Image 1 (spheres, one colour):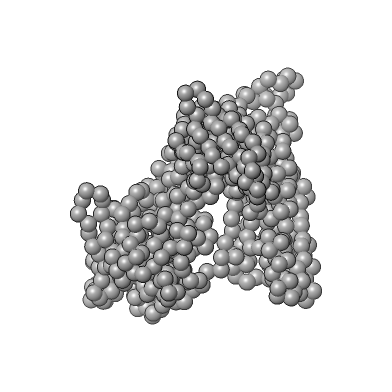
Image 2: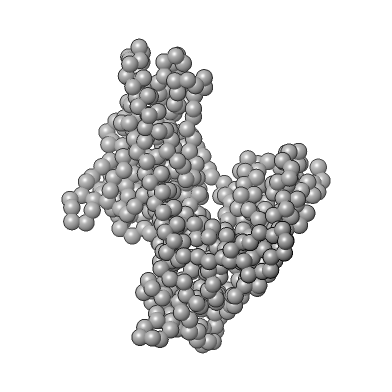
Length: 570
């Protein structure tokens, strides 16, 4: 599988084995191995592609070239008896990651998309939400007179002693903010589309349905279907917002995250049902833009998915000082949109006893109760597969399981549709793992090494186990755990930014230095977590990572101090 034929570097060409592709530029001394991850820009510009294609044609080694591969633009040749080596149903981040990696491995690849390229993340999720959060971050900086004064700045309404310059009072244009989010989504969507077109991925428009083993149909409503075959198929259809029973969504005053990202209006008072990642991020946006927020949380504490210690600190910083109140331990049993001058009404019941608790009247309600897999209409019944709560059952290698628990050969499912870890980058990692598998290299993704982040101000990030999860594991398996912590207040860069609020927490085994979990709350926490996630993925132990060198003064030294403070008994 890994064998390849070498060509003279004087003759630019595409080298292919049955599962490997490397690109040589005319002036390069080394091959450029295109290994794509996450949201990726175009692999090569059109000029570079023309140079590669042209040089391949005029190469004096034409006979060798014919034996090696088809041109890049034709996306290789499929396995005998199939239209494609790989067909992916769904062109979100997971499908995109799998497609690019498949072409890199030499597979003739097609991707089917019934909506728009980019899926939830790019069009209705993490990408446009980050644009809104960028605005809320700037607003918070400009609105914080204390923060500005600490840096020697003054707001417009303050007195202006000699030697001070004025900073205008913060304001915003709602439509301009909305356009920023929409334009970003459009730009990234185009980048993803172009990156696939550039390397010859066939983008097939329509709804994909599995007809049987290794056979898929696709097409638009009102048009005839097309049937194609593939040696391997990946389901990557993603998810949609989950709306509990009793909640009436009108898309105007009772909304999901899909609607909220359009920012069609900023309510004076909005209730957010759910205090997980989605709810927290939107509370950050809405309060920065002037709204009052009320959380409705079914569990007994806010932010139930976070490490309890981190959640407690985050609540003190992100919720208590802001115009946010909350109801915990309650369900929103019924939500009625605003109509005829009446406000949105929310009926609350006790989560345990189901007894009525309260009724809220607000200007709007955002339903942030999580996401549900989008797996209807896939034709799973044609291959004896039944979903479980909507999720496609898979094993640790993302191979689909039928109703008897047996593997469905040549069929895989990645991302939100399988429910293992509903994060865009997890979907991409799973897709890459599947491609490795179909190319003959067994690969099992360690989901405990995949980081997660909440892009509030400050940010929250995590990887691995929470402290309660680690303690439960240690009791079952008979080992001790230890916890180390460092504060952003001791970091020079954080103090220079006047952003010393925050901590980093390490959960580890003192007997062997294994990292079990890392949790960060503070400035740029989402960027800092990757040193820890990569250490877990690579199996790096604390006693080794202690010797890593970090530039000074940088925020990365928060992690440096964290690892150095851990006590390993080796």
